[in-house]
Length: 123
Image 1 (spheres, rainbow, N blue to C red):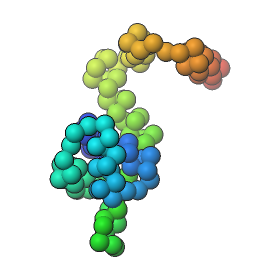
Image 2: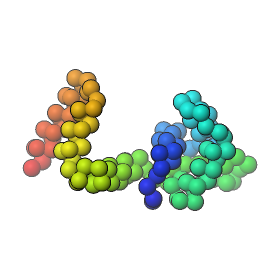
Image 3: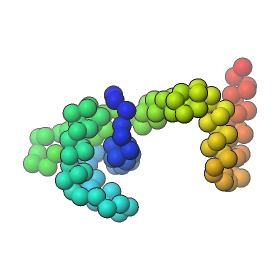
C-alpha cells in the first residue's frame, strides 16, 4: 500500500472505527470537524480504491467501502517512515520530542513506564 495523504489517513481512521461505510456516511463524519465538499470526499475515496487502500462493495446502488489494511500495520509503516526521515532513525529522539511537546497525564506516564519495564524484561 502506498503512503496515505493526510486526507486519506483521516478517512482510513474513520473506516477503521466504522468497519465499513458509504461515502455519505464518511462525509457526514468528516463534516463534523472540517469544511469539505461531498464530491471531494467521493473523489478521495475513489482514489483510495484505485490505490488499493480501501475495498469497495458494488453489489448495491450505494457503494460500501472498507479499509483494505489494518490500522496497526499502517501505523507501524507510517511511524517507521517518520522515525527514519524526521528523526534520523532515532526512536529516542522521536519519544523525547513527543513527550516534550505534549503534557502527558500521570496515567499515560505510568503506562509508558510499564511498557519500558516490559521491554527491559525481554532482554
